[in-house]
Length: 194
Image 1 (cartoon, rainbow, N blue to C red):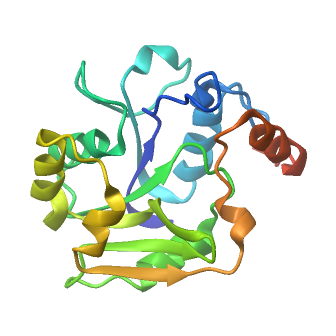
Image 2 (image 1 turned 90 degrees about the vertical axis):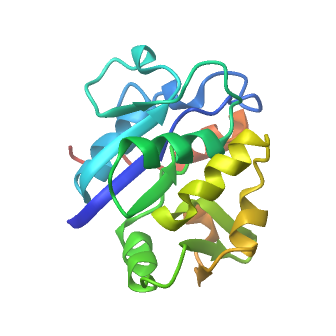
């Protein structure tokens, strides 16, 4: 078990899915969010869910609530997470990436050191900013970005001390953005024993 805090980002708009993807059934659970929370709680000592509205979930979890009236963007999740939690670094994972496994988290942690601002997963298809380790050193920059309505994580990472860890398994990083991607993920997933 990783002795650190993992934050699941589940506050997105889900506009391409057409409905809130965090509430879609998955892996034998009534929602994708509960699936992610349950499996990550077996890997990390502490797990929280960053969201705009905890009332939409029908399970108990540690929720970090984004302020009302702010854009649907990861930037607000980072600001709120660093303000709420006291950790020097946080593992961040988007709710819609259900295939990221323990080996990926371990590789990100192995690549980390105190001189870095972030450690981010990367595949041939590009970098995956919502699968990474973020240090508190970026907290002020996230606040600035939010104030300026600038949500370009790639630009922030490019101008920071960021390590990228390359992975070959592109399919593990599948995002469930569109209905057909969700259906493909359902067909790939075998329900494990809880």
